[in-house]
Image (cartoon, helix red, strand yellow):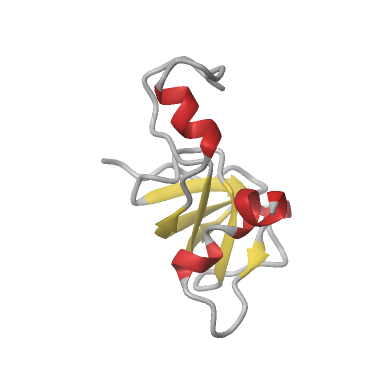
Length: 108
């Protein structure tokens, strides 16, 4: 699969872990509105390392560990996301744990 190119204010994440949430499970059952026409790669949130930054991104760099809601499928090897919503992964937190922060963690 080809990697997406990050837009000007986006980052490309090498996904290390992705969250699974209720909305995605309901989407697979046809009980939740699809955000875009199917088929597409699911995964609303992901954690990993920044692989590329867009031309307008100033506060993040390649190699930073982040978690965030992604705009392309978090279940893929790579995903793009708006750099403004990046959450740094705190020291001592695994990527699996960090992947729960953007949606499930805030809901809890």
